[in-house]
Length: 372
Image: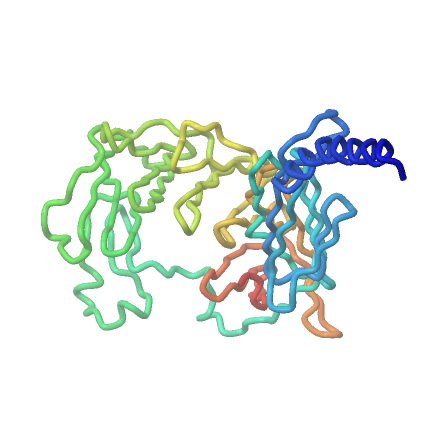
């Protein structure tokens, strides 16, 4: 090989190195060439965690991941900043599929994916004292007066204590920890310590609402957030002005999430959700039903369960992209020779047990544990 040939080869190698080196550096830094946009761009990732652990998780029908034996999560890197579809599969469970955006140099998280069994096991409860649909409150309202109820917790109280009004002229109340908040017949909102009800209560709303004997009233509160449902008109207590401001109407009912971060409320066929930390953000529609929604509860901080007609549906609250929801079978098999048709069900979810209670056709059912 002549000296000139060696020099040419060297120059070619140097040129190739200078051309490839920047690409390699950019690649090592997580950049990729986007053929759709015809440019080099920074990539992102997707993190998925499921309960229970999935058997396989597929990204865009081609990136297949299998969580480890002792892991219920996966992390996929070097994804172009576009929409990507995640499919979660596990035998005996409903599939979970969601299309979510991935941004440059960011990780998109799906960290609370709840997989629902296709065949949830139920059993009949014959002991009616175990029913969660009976009154479980410490107090009860009778003729606009607050009395101690007949629950087991109050069994040691005397007849006189049970027959003496705890608070007079009251239309609604709510308990939280050791406090009680109530609306009096004068329309004002009050608060007091349960251990010191004889003392003068604190008036926490400066302007009253108009009380109508035929209307229904409800108070829902979580720490500093206090809502009042006045016959379908939902108000929120303004902490700065101590006034009840209009929140939304009409509202059939409302529930604050267990972690106090979100509130769901519904009317007719629609379920909405708002972020409590920033109520200036517009509400999002979680679900539109073909039938009137009768009740809606929180399963956990990321999922709700509701009834509409004869149907019971579980839905996530993650409104990025499509919202995953599944409707439970309307025929429940109790044993090989006994099935129960679900009709106009009432539901209750015990978050401590992770079990769903269903009251249908005067039959009380309880499920196996369905949440972690």
